[in-house]
Image 1 (cartoon, helix red, strand yellow):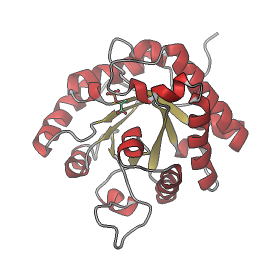
Image 2 (spheres, rainbow, N blue to C red):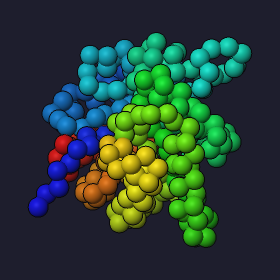
Image 3 (spheres, rainbow, N blue to C red):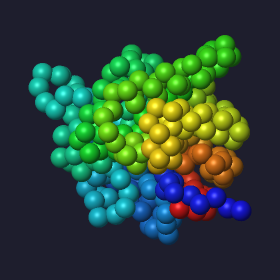
Image 4 (cartoon, rainbow, N blue to C red):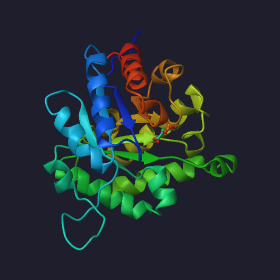
Length: 261
Ligand code: PEP
């Protein structure tokens, strides 16, 4: 018998450091008509700060959510180069990526920093999409779960009372990001199921059942169906394949077809 699904699927585009304002405008204009029938899927575009203002403006009256790729946990002050939750909300951004592996690995973000940023986003009423995942070396050494559970636990410890709907996690094995290598649907389910189990231990079953957990790592139209078909996978965080509006629209429509909301 089909399981009654309570979590709305989500498909999120992570543009990383790509797209000038003009390119972002073209993309949004192409995307919107192509996803208007994709009911039951939450769509988010995580744009660089420079085009985020324009993306947020263009999608203001649509169900698509504008998201930032980073924030700082203070609201204002002497933090050169940083952007706060209040600033993001001021331009209409409703979501924010936190702890993407590129931030952790290239810019040295610690579990502590990621946890504080997440807590600030939640407190401000933004939806944080918190990324966790292991490197190939960690996986080979059998340390995948040690790494992911530590990352999840540190974030949860920092948070006060909240509903599961107020936070999203993304399991993104680093070896699968931008490499073309995808975790098998079973591996994605296994990791995401374990994360949900841990959330249940930490905050109770109701919380865990409300949290959406996405998979990220070389998602494309050819594999989105089998990934979305996994019980605990609630959607995708997409890098490379989100850069082209047609392809991302295919993924959004694919997600709509593979989950009952
Ligand atoms: C990402 O950057 O979050 C990501 C999953 O990238 P890609 O889809 O290119 O692997």
